[in-house]
Length: 296
Image (cartoon, rainbow, N blue to C red):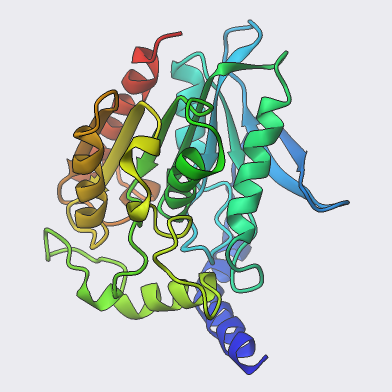
């Protein structure tokens, strides 16, 4: 109990600036629809935003997205721009899914919500083309997308994964992780350590492949992989190493791009005309091209 109370206090403190910002914010996500996806727990739903593709044809290919969070921050809705961009520029409907957060709900709670969201999509064959289920994620959400795609369902259920700056080796000490470009603002190791403590219960091995997808067999991943890393992000080397290993597997095609001069989660706050904004536009355009190139 004391361990949990300590983590709860730490999580509350690091969440506070975000809560204060939300109180003064006049903007928010603008999905076409907000739904509640049934969970495995009786009476509990999973909130999701739906961004509908313009093409009025069913069933539609679907991209299921999972937001960044450090497994701790309530950031559902932060990917609104990305989700809208995908739905407007491809034939994919985007389902942007919330999931439970630590330390209140440690591993495997978030992964269970991710699995339940994918299972719900599979149960909707008149709405969604089950031969074209892709999943995407940012940061912690990308970790969850990678894990679910390669360990939770038979291979082929998920056609592709789009992973932006994912942590893939949570077993590695955050203090030993170094960004390729040291001039930026990577996640402080002390904060990353709190994230890991909150997410991983005591006694659970962080090398569990459902926590650290770097330890999953490479041949279990979907046949099409898209991975974005950031030059100023200490998580870049581990994600790029995973991309290299996946690219060596026969039958897996990997698109991997490092966005130079970009911090972790840079795409959420860019200014027009800056290199970072140009990088965001390039990454989003590459994502659209990746999805369009999947055989429909």
